[in-house]
Image 1: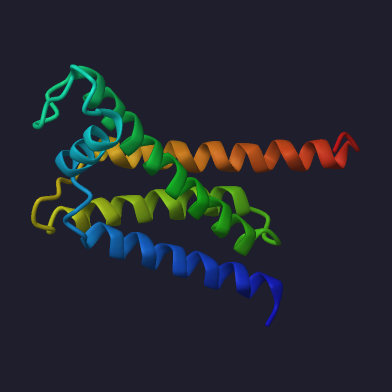
Image 2: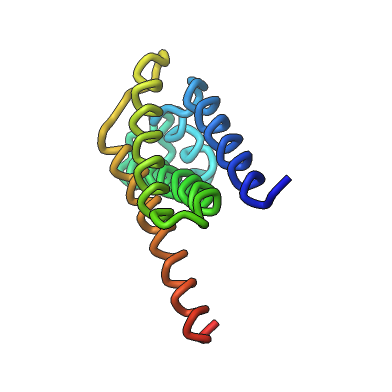
Length: 148
């Protein structure tokens, strides 16, 4: 199997994993907040709030959830880029496909009990793709100039 096909298979597997995780009801903001509360808040801490109403926990919850969007869809953009690397518009194709998949993922999520669809999450997903593709571009430029 050619190297390009392996990247395509990896991208499809990654997309399948995203699809499967979207279906799980455990990845709601409330459940993430509870998990962070359990990890961060100890018995000796005075913050101990079982409902995770603490502002610090909520900020950490947002950071964890949004950085997950950036990372997961950044990885998808890299896998798609490697699949299209031989094509002239590989960066553009990777970005557009990642953006479109993010939209379909949020749409799919809107049908899942306990989950909420948000266009803001599509923007975080797209930011992850832009960030990952920018890093690839910078690395390629530096390699071409012999700096890496």
